[in-house]
Length: 411
Image 1 (spheres, rainbow, N blue to C red):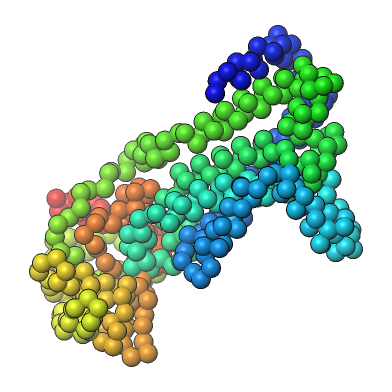
Image 2: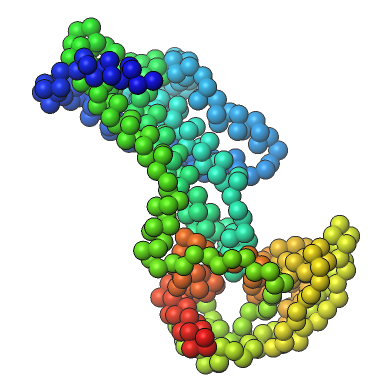
């Protein structure tokens, strides 16, 4: 594995390397490669992240979609270039339409970028899609009960937690773009300063100017080493170090106590209102709204009929599988009452032709697993709920600090 690199290193004129790289052909190829691969990587991220999110969900035909997304990775690059030429070339499927719009794609710098995106984006999609499919969704469920909409959950929970996979996929796409040869030469040709990237220059100059070709090869290997090395970095450890610097504590061990559920405190500031310090003692029960819950779940073997008065606390105690979590999930809106009904205060939130989604019924769920967003600071964790309810960032953080101060006084 290492012997070819040793052989290449023995042929390079190391003392002349700066002068060789400063030559016109080398400088043009190096600059073009760096510009096009960076642009192709940006486009791959912009298009690949939404595609990975779509492919991570289950829908009819998703397996075929995953195969098609991976297909450019498996086909020979020259075949990929031929396919692009047959589509976007002058005589291609869309060639006449492009000519009518005054656009020339093939054998231009744009063709280089398109070829690089076509062959490199699947690396990002596969890496991120696998991470999203295997992710733990408990944090997203907690965020939903705190009034976070789908966009907020995706932007503030899902993608930040998948950031290590996104970084690895981006690095792989960058490395693949940097080394692309076959699709580029078939679709873009080899015009110096326009489409001749480093791989093309290395191939074409190896007979005319072998010294420059070897110098470019060394640079390409060095850049590839850095990119591939980035995929080997333990991004989870980097994330933990970053969170430690922000003074975020590690999540506590999972609790063995039954799940607890309580309606939201109506005395909290209205969305958008300025924050305030707590006027109540933290150990006194909050004056929440009454809760009425009646439903039967045949599939889970659970039948429940209960009422909880405002300001009261109800404990559900029973063995595993007795329905404690089911009751909490139905009340929070994570499960449908299926013919039953749920009332929070005077509002019917689940019943015949009525279903208020989680996060919109004023009920927050604290599950057995600690509901800590591990990529956020302590203050941001506490401020997440008020922020999702429409409170400004400054007001939500002020409210979070007040709640934390009250907890410290109590302890």
